[in-house]
Length: 250
Image 1 (tube, helix red, strand yellow):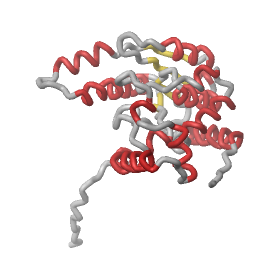
Image 2 (image 1 turned 90 degrees about the vertical axis):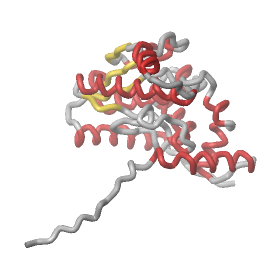
Image 3 (image 1 turned 180 degrees about the vertical axis):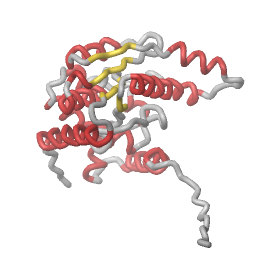
Image 4 (image 1 turned 30 degrees about the vertical axis):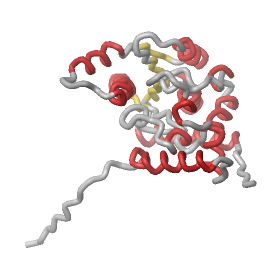
């Protein structure tokens, strides 16, 4: 059995310093703009930013697509942290874009339009409020491609991209976030299923595999490996052609 040590207090201190340093170097005096879903990831990122920058420099953006059944969790978070926040309903934009497309849209297209419109919304808020947009994805999600490219997978800085789901939860408790936010069952917000239903395995199994390489079910290992390989492109910079132009001096 492989073991690894996770020092929660050191990780918290290091992450807070990393955020503070990022803003010092990439936008001194700027605000952190965080999309607030009411789940653990956005809650932890917002709390980390408050700790690093102060509540007066963190802006939460709630973006329901019509009716959001758990919007009260997002409101609980911004009230708990005491941060400025905007509630911007994206349904009109989503419906407008889908209605303007001159072809029958695939199910995946319909599912991915909302997160991309949410990211456009976050940048609209950021550009009008001297802000930098936080990416709220964690390592476990990124490892198997569980994000929308140029949607929730985008952002200017990413505090959680090297932390597993279990580690993010530990950070949430260390930050004294309400337990209901830390332990809220993650739902993808696209088709209404839980993350684990969509993935076909638990985050506990995935986290263990990422950190130790150990897994009990070979079929699940194959599934994780396949998803990781298929979605690696999401974690890489856009491929760019280099024309290799030769410049001759006269």
